[in-house]
Image 1 (cartoon, rainbow, N blue to C red):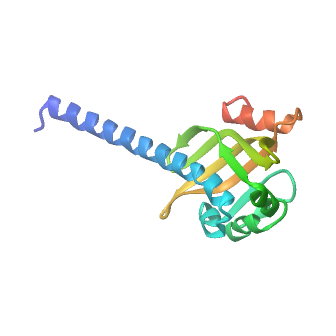
Image 2: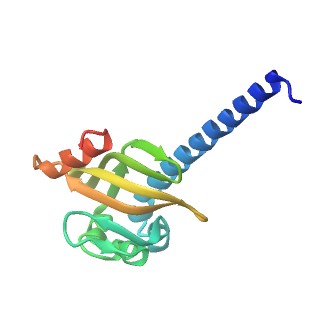
Image 3: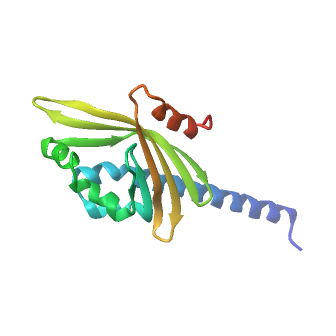
Length: 166
């Protein structure tokens, strides 16, 4: 028969393992989302595509891109090619990540800086909602919604959903 202290120790160990797993998942999601800017600004179609699941979606307010290969191909389209040629930086903020087992939602901001003459201009500032799933190949983006922060309701709605008010 096990001692009561051993049962308590086993539970504490199980709780600790769960917390470590959650921290590892959160760190992996941060790493995944941090990869977006360098991937698109280096025009790496492969790296960009690898962030999404095979049937992933990128909804930026127009016709959504469907499938990781189509999303990766975004780096070879206009106006993206022109931004990179001038000098661009896609910068993600530290997102708010809400884990739910093997799925997660990350909410945050992105900015696109483009070099113009002697300085940098913010071309866009957007709200982002990333829906993610843990797969055999690590965390992948299932759906990214991106809405301009231009005073319209779309960006505010994405941010509200991310903090539980949507």
